[in-house]
Image 1: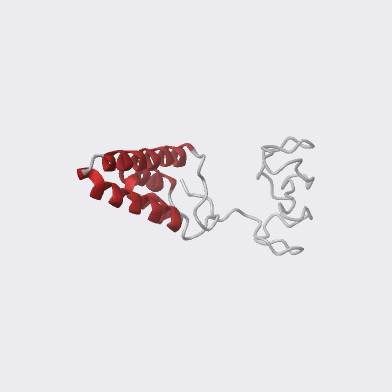
Image 2: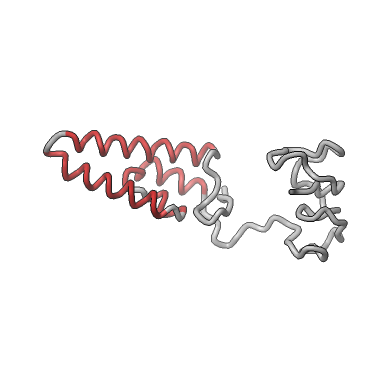
Amino acid sequence: MYYCKHCGQPYQTEEAVMCVKCGAPKGKGTNFCHNCGKAIDQNASVCMNCGVATSSVKPADAKSKIVAGLLGIFLGCFGVHNFYLGYTQKAVIQLVLTLVGLVLCCVGIGAFIVLGVEIWGLVEGIMILAGSINKDGKGNSLAN
């Protein structure tokens, strides 16, 4: 459960975009801990009650949404964007399907396999840029 950083009241759902009590946008405010709802010092970097960081610090290894999206659009059939984001199993499947498709191109069906995987990568690239896919393989949010 998450709490309003402005008034300390719990959000109705995790998807809430604003507090129904005070009307503050989610994530705005410095008076209360977003994790436990206890009052905190406005200059504190961690909550003294539960120990979580009070500011949303971007992780040093945050992956770029733009880079991941462009890799998906241009090199999606090879799974490069999924390797970049840490979705290794899905990336290996895309790479293997593309390689099998290239080998089977002489039979004719391989072109359809490669085309299908390329469409898969293109759609994922667009979804990354649109924000539908917004986490990497470790669950960290993608940086802009």
